[in-house]
Length: 253
Image: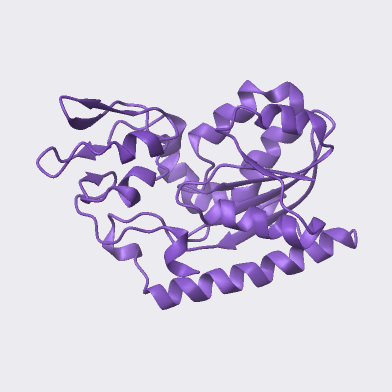
């Protein structure tokens, strides 16, 4: 089995690597940003496919990756992991339906509640201890899911009609446009920016460039929140107007 994932600030990477450890005893995982990922999919019959959920949907970058490389998924056995800060309904089902359309066999689905990465919205913030407990609970759930898959009794969270309805009417219909296109809402405060280039290197979409010693965004943001959470001067916001916490998985382990 190989792990294929997209991860903003480390939550999903952590989860897929833990799943592989419990399922296979080792870790072979590739980000969809890696140039070798498609070849890794071709070489493996069994795949765990993981991503965070945004507005009850998969990130645009994940949707585009599946569509762009649809031929490699035919005949693959795929277990889907969806990480989320809140209830998503059919977070795993969003990709499962698309992958099945391209000939994949979906073996199961797992929803994992993890620390939220949206650092510029105060209402979503938890204490470090609360987030630490979330990670512990998620790892326990991962271990159980991996054991069940070994036994041929995989969990199927996010898959099926009722999960689909919960995701559709719970959030996705109201926020459909949030993930249909890439966002142009990323804001960088020039007065705070020191031109270090950390955000440029972190961006999954090549959406930020340095001009005259300052970082400037384009209109191609997939809302992964890496730049917001890694900026040393807290100069970047996306959904909110102020950074309340910089959320990266290492803080909660």
